[in-house]
Length: 325
Image (cartoon, rainbow, N blue to C red; front, side):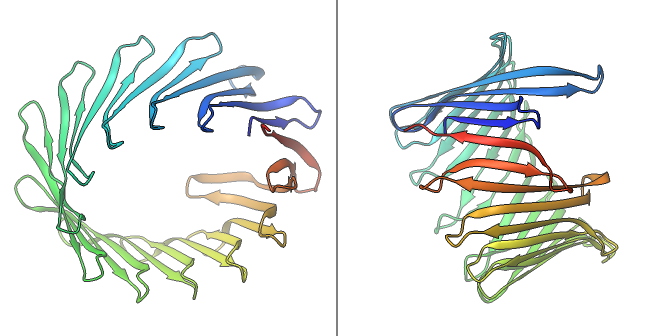
């Protein structure tokens, strides 16, 4: 994809993205333009961002930077890699080109992270984490140290069953007392069906249960409060081909907070998507929102157009995609 455009109902551009690639199809540059409403001044303003990426000869991303319309830099991220492709250093720079933070990683002979140090802007160490593994390469322990005194701030112990599934995680304080504990249960197919988090005193903080269909796809997820009451419930439904055709989020009182529906063509590509939302875990929508998206493809099943419709089935905007040949 080299360009993505979202139009307003009057045909004007609301959002536009353009992309540039290297010969290996890795993104070199992404430019975003958006005309947005400033709620403080009640006027429309134009926004512009450009992201630039660089890679080494092995395809590892060595640099990422964001620029504003006037050419000023928002941030720059520099990565270094070893000969095996492991990221050994990450440095983020501020707008004035001073260092925001730096992370240095160490690895074992199997490419597993064994130590991570994060440095502050002044070069002092903020924290250090150690990673320990069992003979099968599974992460089993992770102590963390603060600085400048390099005191142990705590550690986590991971326990696994005979199927190599984590069934318990215990977080300890520096004095050896338990900070919190997580337990997990699985069905006979290895799917997680229960996750309970306990406080230091053994009381339940929260509980999460899941159910799956015969194909192993999650069809129900329930989050419980510490008193056992339902906090939220999530339901999913699939067609015979395994495509998701419906998902519903229920509020604590059992009423629908939001609902999404999907339709596909005979080749399994999504051609219609609708959603309704009156409330989510992040807040209420007053009035409730509804939108429908119709997607069109070219002969190679690349998306070429998406049209948005409101609850009256009137088109509100259109997104057009263009591709390099």
